[in-house]
Image (tube, rainbow, N blue to C red; front, side, top):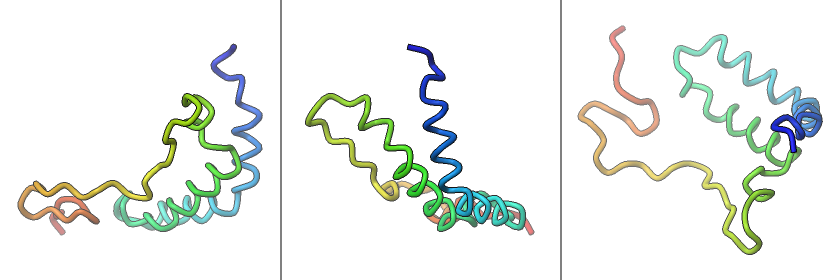
Length: 92
């Protein structure tokens, strides 16, 4: 089995989610941080995974929990000045 054997599946998923990907790329162009585009990123990711099928579910053992959390649990030990949503403060 080739590493690239699912390339047609990936391309089909990207084609199906082209509008969502374009909105995400436009957001990145105007954003000051990767984190500024979280909503657009989530929309694109959900579309892509829905269209392609989550690779984890294809590789996991039958009956395994393959659910992907929508966002990671915030760390209770964030460094001072950090926000779970925006990262460390930046100099302006």
